[in-house]
Each structure stands twice: as C-alpha cells, then as structure tokens.
Length: 453
Image (cartoon, rainbow, N blue to C red):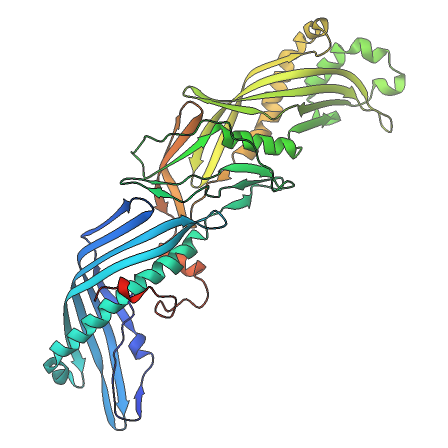
C-alpha cells in the first residue's frame, strides 16, 4: 500500500521547487496488526483496519531568489481507521472483477519532527502544519485504495485464465456463470468448467451431472469437479478425432505379432503369396465418448472401442483379418500440483468379444491376455504421459495451491488446498499494471463522499 503526500508552498513570486522532492515520500513504518478481512453478504469482501499507525518521511526543498529552504519531515499518523469494501461481479467475458470500492478512512492524531534550515520555525508552527497534513492524508487514503482495487487488483484478476487452449485440439472454458455470492464465511463462485474442441468453439455439452455440495472447511479454498467436467474433456477429444491408435509393422510388439499371425493362420494361408508376409496392422478406435463415474470408493472411466487386425501389403489395399469390440474400465486417480490438475490412469477391466457371432467370441479368448498386456505396456504409458501434464486451474499469476487433499463423493470430487504466493504480489501487479496508471490520484477517483475527513 502506498500513499501520495506532498508539501504545499504559497510563495509570492518566482519560486523554484524541486518537482521530485514532493514525490519522494517513503513509508517508513506500517502497523496493521488490528486488521480483519471478511466476507459480507451478498457480494462484498471487506477489509477493516482499526487503530493502525503509519510512519512517513519526505523531503522539502524550496528556492526563492536567494532564499533557500531544505530539509526533511518525519511524520507519524496514529489512530488510522480504514474500512473498505470490494464489490465483486462477473464481467462480460465471465471473469471475476472488482466492480466497485467503497471506503471510509480517518486519522485521529498526527505528529511531525522537522529537520533542516528552518527547523525551529517549523517546530513553532507544528500544530498548524500537522493539522494540515492530517487533513491531506485523510483525503488521500480512499483515492489510493480505490485505485488499488479498481485498477491494480483488477489487473491481477486479468491474469486469471477464462477461455484458453489445453493443446492443439482442445480448449477449456472457466468463465463464471453468475456473480460471486458472499456469505458470512465463504465466497462462492460457479465456473462453467467445460472442455471444447478448438475446431468447434461454440460447441457445448448438456450437463446432466449432480451439482456439487461443499461442506469442508479445513482449507482456504475448495474446488469441486463434477462428472460433467471430465465427460466434456473426453467428449471433446472424441469429437476432435484424437481417441484412436494405429500400430503398423514394427510398432506392433513382436510377441503379439507372432500370436496374432498364429491365431489367424487359417485365414492368412488362403491369401495370395504377395500378402502373406505383409506387415500386420492393429487399430484401436473409440466408438463413443468415454464416460466418467465418480463414487466415494474411487473414479472410473468406461471405454468402448473397436479393435481391427489387418495385413497391409505395400501398394495394395489392406486385408482385414478380424474385427472385435473391446470394453475397458480404467481407474483414475486425481492429484493437484501447483495449478495443474493431473490424472493417473490404470487399466482395471478388459474384455474383447466379436460383434459377428458368439462362436467367434470364443475364438478370441486366447487374445484376451496378450491384448491387455499390450495396452498396459504400450498404450497406457502414452496416455499417462499426456494426462500427467495436467490441466491448469484458474488462479491469478504468481499464486499456487499447497497442502492439497482430494475427496471423492457421489457424482463429484473436491480438492481442498491453501493458497501460496509463489511470486510477490507487488511484482505481479507491477508486471501487469495497465499503462498510464502510475499515479493513483491521476486515475479515476471515487466520489468525495466516500472519504471521511
């Protein structure tokens, strides 16, 4: 927090005042021990400071013909009381904003110590000077706080991602659905939390998931993710054509290649000699968007895919040997690191069957174990490598989650965490400060009635 204070002189003619001297105001001491930050229904965050103290030091410098006055003033303000309320809302883009700042501020007592050329004169007039300084300080506290809320804090909130890309295929929308709602102990914000294919920017998925209910209170922040959040991600990747995998030739594990050729030996020997020794192709294609189920016992993902086995002779059409259906169930373990929500998948259940006949399904039983092993060794590591990169949770720049704890419920999971500033708040604000807003009194100021003299 910074205050702008100056020294005003009224010479009769031709003075020369160092323009920088009146701006060299340094806050030497700030005691805000009796302070409180709390929520106030319906949409306000209130900062209450009582009986605080403030120490200031600034230089004075005045040259009038041959008359020179230079020195310093050490001032202290006591009994500083400030009550400022930030009204929070949702802007047109769905980002949280400070829409208004109300303020009441007063300084009870002011003391000053003078040094320099005419120290004794200033000490003689100290009662009048400190009264004027107290009046000026009273008038400047609220404009400074208004600037801090409407300009500086909003510049920090501008760093919260609202709609951004996850990768080259899919984006995520974290826009607020309504204005934040404050109660006596909580600030509730409802985010959309939905993925979408980048090629279909306006696409949306109907939300049939249960609405999360937050009851915990051991951590500073709780974020709830319903099944809709994960279903929209899998639906988006499905629509983007990413849920398919093709292994050809050397990409097929050698043992599996031999087993598949032995299994379909009867079909292969009936082919022409030019095709028999062709590379083998194994193709997996998800048939419908996977679905997520969240229970207190854990989180699972159900997948149904087709598995096609074929020979791909060079410069000739491929020859299909078999086509089957695969049902798989994956367990998913969620973790939050910094700002990234990460997922670890594990293959729990696997079943293949023929969509042609029950007899062919019996013939596929010997392939059950080898295909499951191939998925665990060849496919799951690739999936987990991508999933472990995580999805960014919307937080301002320089702020991370710490002491994370994940809890499963029926239809949703919650992640509780405390907030940690990985960067200094001043550093982040200075980096993102809008142009031409260095002087808080030069920017938009609140109505005079908000500052209590």
